[in-house]
Length: 102
Image (tube, rainbow, N blue to C red; front, side):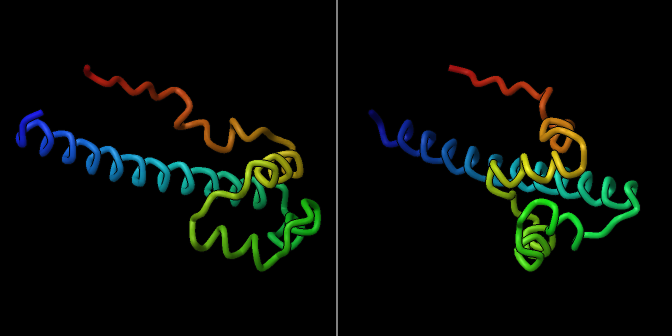
């Protein structure tokens, strides 16, 4: 393997890493945007969601403010409490197909 090939592979790894980080952030934003919408739509509050799901209120607030994904089982609890699905909460991104060239 030549130095040029190694350099290109390293560059591709960095690009993939940054793309995945960006994609994850967008998915988190979409998830919490929809959760907030449904909380408002149901005329309730984050405190209610925390109580209904068994997630500590401070933990829920922190996940929302820091835009981090909940654990999978917590995402399911959130979706159930809001009478929806996890798929709906991240729906904008479910139909994206990534193609990689060989």
